[in-house]
Image (cartoon, rainbow, N blue to C red):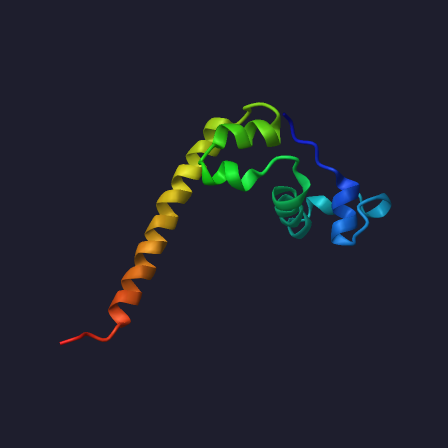
Length: 104
């Protein structure tokens, strides 16, 4: 397993030329994030959503990176994201509960 980004396939999907004078286009935030999303949903030979739903960071890392370089940093960032997303969800649920009319 290893990351095999098919630049020409992504270029066709995005209807954008990443060759010649545009060869650095994938370094721009717009194209970098879009190409990552494209790879996640369409460009990978593996169903990364299923691995994510199973919280299988090891398999995702191995598939995308081909090894485990930077795995510990990635694991820490994911743990922090879960904490922040849970806090956001709790605040959202709290607001929804507070806006409902009381019965009584």
